[in-house]
Image 1 (cartoon, rainbow, N blue to C red):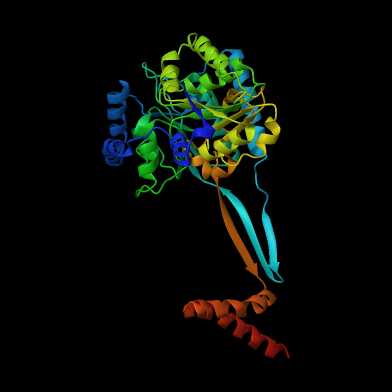
Image 2 (tube, rainbow, N blue to C red):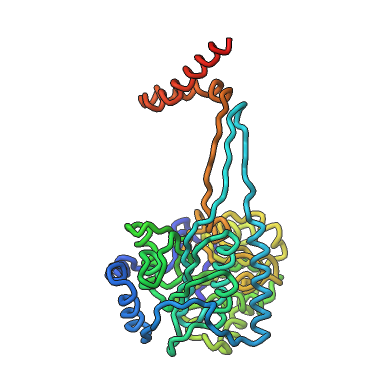
Length: 435
């Protein structure tokens, strides 16, 4: 990993360090758009065509109901999944909003209520490894929110089978349809709907650049579909000081680097930290990883930044806005209070990012690529929409109506003014009759 010293960098150089590896979306959009168009026009046959082309599998049928599939998982695996699901369920259930009701002035009552997004699509990446954890992170809040239609899409293996762990989670989260496909064709199928795939209103889930491009294109198309958040390759920023265990720091960097060669890991340390011990641990642990080729390529694009103190470290982290932020310092709790931009934060030496990825209860579907500056990670509210209501009494209309008449007249919108004026006149007539 390259090394930089923060105090020697100009503001422009700091900004450059915060930039992610550039993704050439223009060329990717050009490759993805024809796939989207084909699926829109030809439905299931287009899904099968592209799945055979890219994955070497012709899925027949294209979709399955997970309830009809037999799952042969060991008791140990089931127990691990159940324990993780319980924690995720508990944390997301507590996010359920109560009805907000405010009388803004006498006779004027405003309310806000939450309603589920009725049809949602959950994309579960396959790629180099199946991700049952993502099935939990998306399926559980969809279930709690009360989404009526939950469609899950995940690529089959080379024999055309779905990961049993993903099927098991689908069975427990109310999924009725699993699409046996990945890539842009799967995103298009859920956006437009096909003979076998119900169309959805919002699509969730991470993926490669083709999946991300498909989501971005479709949210601006006549498919009328929303997406959870923009997402690029996975990333982590670790803040460490001299008290951090080098083995722990190295393991946290590698746990993110092994996702793929396009992942980025950043280590920000104080100047008293033993970086040589950390890099030594990195080499030692890297050699033992089955996915060391991916991790090694990711590390080549990553770097170490040396700061004077943890205050400078957290300031840089907020500028970088990482997907995952690990604070492994003596003052971790105090630093956590200063976090402004991050997808999810892991505090202290006993909190590896892996815990949040799988089972602590927080969601691991998070904004990457610097989008943590303006996006939240997926949560229960991501599966809901909020509707405002108001009810005005006679007295409320009398109290507030004249101000609305004035404002409507100011904007030259006479019909708006008349809608209030007619009612006020009616109330005036009523008052006369009552006398």
